[in-house]
Length: 323
Image (cartoon, rainbow, N blue to C red; front, side, top):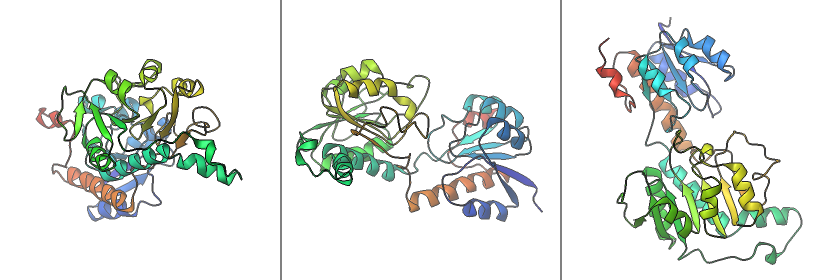
């Protein structure tokens, strides 16, 4: 019945009905991996004409085993779980959905910022423990007029900036592009941003260059009493260094939607610190965004396996390489 097969390594939703429907209409069989161990994915990849992946590592070994594979499609934006260089070298297209969940992540970032600023999570936990004490969470400062530093000025950060401006925050930003122009955001170096911001929010991809971008030296540069927010990738932050900065009272708190590893050791610092808000990599999720993501990625696969050009190819040089 089916002429081609697609391996789905993992997913973060309750079923795969959307993916299966789109692929089966195109005469493509969907195979769902029972786990994300590398050996499991290597075995299943040998018969796959395409791979769809959410968070599972699509490593060099997996790609080398995928002799028939024509496309690796990321169910999301970031590509740090795919060995893109290996895929490119083997003539395999890689796609993502770069405009996915921009609004959701921006909204979650602002929700975390507000929760930190007004100590919402802290007071909530206190009252659930039977402690009804205004003084437990002071000092509280007016949010308007404080500085939010955006590390990375891509599409999500720009969405955050527009919303944060409405709260009366002064906006600083830094990026790999010197003096990148974003309305309402003053560009500055990372060092200046860290030393001047009351809140620092991370919005850069995870690469070899950005791993532990926020380490002990950068945390020491931050203003005393500042807050760190991460809705990008867990590996951007040295969590041991963050725990130290909190233990010494240099930072007043942090909010981490992404961690390394995931799930993190919730009984260890910094994750068990009452001043740290931890959410389970949920910033990207809404009913609207997830359904759209699933349809678009399944369609990318169907188009590619039927000989078309899928949207959002990240290694288009593969198309220019003589077969």
